[in-house]
Length: 338
Image 1 (cartoon, helix red, strand yellow):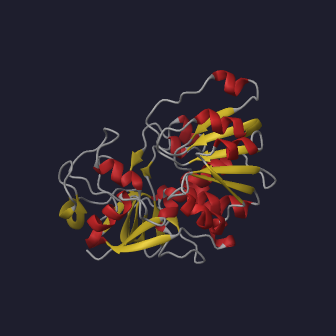
Image 2 (cartoon, helix red, strand yellow):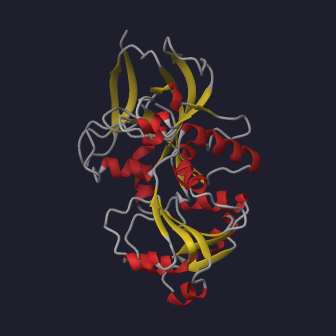
Image 3 (cartoon, rainbow, N blue to C red):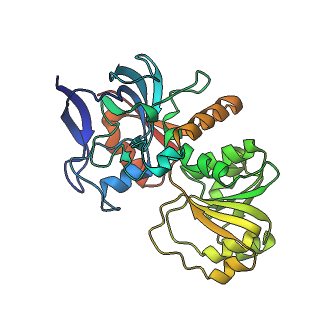
């Protein structure tokens, strides 16, 4: 039986979000329906609203950092029950048949479904997904602020696992914002010596409080020169072009510069900058469901939570303006009041 779902949506490019309703048909056999309690507001929502990636279809209901309770399940769902509190991030389904899926890399599924691409997301009363991507939230993780973990959090946690970062490593985080602040928290609890790169002196004290041991002005060549060859891993969370060779110089032999920020410009890097130190440039999207489980366990063990601000979902346009102006510290969570 079809049901109507209340939401907020952009009806066309450049339009503010407004009240919107859409129809949902019968739930899929392997789907769960989540009653949305909160949903994080991510910069990717803003990019989709502006169609910066050329993938947006309107009307668009954004929202892919969902926390809520399972209220309905399909007939073949086995891992979840009605009443379970779960989180949902960027991915909402994977085929479970392609080579990446069969090798445990569902985040790289070649037929994967994304929560706000060609379907309606979490700025709504409810949202659906395949059961694999609805991950239970441990009791020790604060559900009120957990939403950003399911996109921003896993985006910076996954590379730490992927790159085999060790507690004895010196590492760097480039950009102390919505992604970078969580990377600082994770890496400091991982046991690393953490360097925060920022162009904003006003963030120095904040970066230290978030877990950085050293703060480096990313525009000061003298400061960068002092750490030449010291870091084994640098995580770039920025979405603008930088002088990447300067950060490659900061890497030790076999070091890795890893991108999670969506930089749209080509990288202007000479292979010689990589060759002599056997250095690597890499990138990654979100992590697998299994890595999300590990991240939540790590958060529970070390009492890690995103630093958030809260808005009611009905004030989503105010929240978007707050995000776009660069005032958010550091993630925004919308409370569902639809």
